[in-house]
Image (cartoon, rainbow, N blue to C red):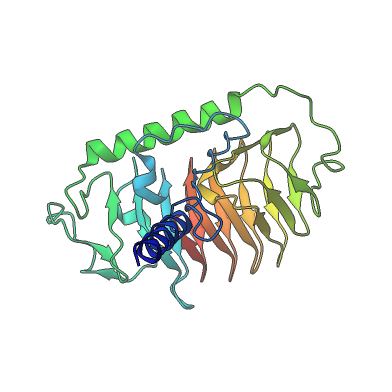
Length: 280
């Protein structure tokens, strides 16, 4: 009987250790969970970003006026608009809520576009407490950004950037690109890069997009990282679509149905007609 009890005890103890071994973390039957580490964020590619200061408070910022054609469906603008040193009378064609005040009521602080975006002018503080002095500062920042963007020195000379400024159909990786001619976009172009990559397009002349042409972003590229800096006018044809921040020394003009995801900053005026402008 004692031998039987001893034999049974051996079986019980052996079974215990076998079962315990099977349940240990890291065993083949119950492997330890894998260690997950975050992938490093890729370093940005392209030129150092242009500092816009306080200008990004506005999606449209001009110095002599902002107008839209009131005889057709009004432009859809997401973001605040402002003019300086011009006064509120230079903002025309929009449905403002309430109506723009007259010269005796410039202390009002609630004029907005019908979608709620705020309207500012040099002699009118607009909504949200931004003063004419602060608006002047934003315009100055916009001008400094324009000078900075046009003053950057390319590291490598441009090659294969189209004939006589025609860049239709090309693909641009992150970088600094320079033209001493007018630039035209008669067909779609592509900007291919990551979400933190940057582009600066320096144009000593005008920028013109043909009707139905588009700037297409791939690879996660973002409109807020793209600068179009010109010494001349910028004109978008019917239903053209632009991505990026436009810094023009003069006028920016959009024809019917053209759209922008970005910002429009003009040295003179911005003229719209049934356009869609969306801040990035």
